[in-house]
Amino acid sequence: MIWNILSTLFASWAAEVGALTWLGLALVAAILEVSVPHFGCAFISAGAVAAAAAAFFGFSVPVQIATFVVVMTVSIAGLRARLLDRVAGPGVPSRTDPLIGRHGQVTHDIDPVLGTGRVVVGGEDWAARSPEAIATGTRIRVVRADGIVLEVTRT
Image 1: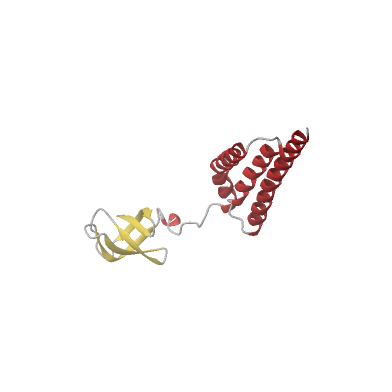
Image 2 (image 1 turned 90 degrees about the horizontal axis):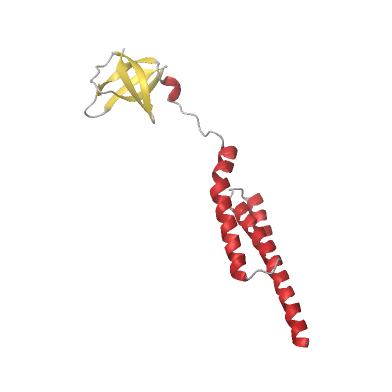
């Protein structure tokens, strides 16, 4: 009789301690996320809240851990990229994209074998390459940009 009462009390105490432990982890992760936002700790917090719910309903520790891992993994896979895209924005605009279609002049011979050459487009000096050799002083048109190297053709 006493053993059954103690067993029941211990079981409910263990469930409460388990739930409180998971909620404590969720709180710490939430504080870290607010302090240093990088969308990593928020998912730990979500998994910990789900594991706390499992502990509250009396599920075993392996089930709690499995719940934590599944919720955290699913939330990371499903939401992290979307949240980062929304917060991060489009990124740094390209300096070379507005030059496509513009005309310029070759300042150093463009050699297709070596992949060397320089052009002036819009008053700025740029590295350039072309599938054909182009001599200094020739007018060119920018057809594409590969990073900071302009790909050009004769006009």
